[in-house]
Length: 382
Image (tube, rainbow, N blue to C red; front, top):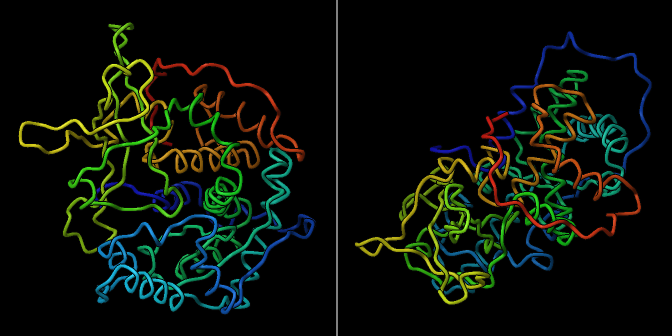
């Protein structure tokens, strides 16, 4: 994989936090019971194709469907292709074993009280899981509706974490909190607007004019199907100049790509579709080079952007950056893990998280301040 994309990078965080069994704390009293559901096979097959919360399948191309299910889609019409694709998602569902249920329950009975102490509003959301074959979505965990979808190989890792004491619990929390954040984003998108716009610095565009180069490489993230988030790059040497706009996106590196392993995070340069409205643009178009190809570069190479979203991992969509931030905050605030590198740059994120999840009653009704466009000190990956 050419870049660290989606939850694959969370597994690197797990590796960084995973310690030997000598760190176990097995004499602690058993925590309170946690609200957790493991969907049975018939329930999972119904839930995994339920698009009522997010119109996911309607957005997929046949090319994407093939890559996300591991085999070429053979149907000819879009309607038949979606039907075939949904049938494959249903066929990928599996039952949890008793050992897998026990491992996840054990982990959650440790994670839930720790999260509740720091972020009780976050802990209100019940946990719900679907298990699938690793052929689906490139073997990466993701979400649908209120359910976290876990690939079968990850279940073995959770069983090891459940037996590895505090370090294993913190490692599992990094993955599970990231995914649960996506569930909450889907249920309460308004809660995240202040983070996206006033902390990260994004603008939600009314429209980005389509381009065949992008369409041919389209890759829809099930946890962030709204991709109209754009980012202004200011020139500190010329503070009165109009910003340069970029569109962060994850795409197939090649329009003929056959696998999700052939993904790439890019920064596509934009310009206002109506230059006279450049002060407060709402509609954008891609900036093209002399050959007619969109001007773009590797997203992790855009230093000011990386600084603003505070992660070098899942940085291609504000939903993903927010999920990384919540996982990082929980590991730091609930488990005291210094590997999370809790620096000064996290203070605005923590303020937002405390306002949003610091009470069981929900977010504080406070008007956010105007966003700052000046980049922070460059961050290192954690």
